[in-house]
Image (cartoon, rainbow, N blue to C red):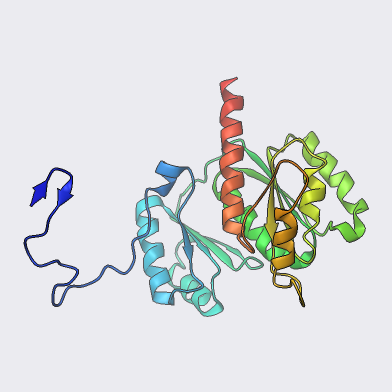
Length: 249
């Protein structure tokens, strides 16, 4: 029965009911329409069967399924199950995108730059790049330009700014210093992406995260350790909003 805004259950609660089946998966097929960012299947903690079922639901509802942190066995199962579909596999990022035949990825006009301090940071950086691309952004990558050889950064960074980049993602492990350096040089938002590269005290990305959080460079925001999906989506939202404003003017 409904009384005002309060719903009272006079019958047995179906959650408690005997023999009730529990819905195990509920992929958000309307997230991109509502939020401007796509649903992403986090496969690392799911079975292959769960991941496949979620991908099938997203493909039916949106025409595309983005899957992150895919274990090797699940990747093999996905490729076999969706052999007739268009697929994109990012081996470094352990990610996969499946498209319905004929699916056309939108182009928003946003431009995201993705910078990694070291080659070891590339898997997380590439995860971020993939998400920004799937949100319609042009993505330019600059890898292995960490503070141990800072001279490597200057020329590609100047080119990015000349090309009108809207936002930068900077991935770094170890000391996590590069995002602060970049944020002190550029007039666009910078997203610090700490990676779990590093060892000993402060290893596993802890020192990198704390360093970025303690930055004195304005304009640097930080996501959690190895959160390439979060960094990519945030950058995509910023770049797409900027692109929309450009079109209006």
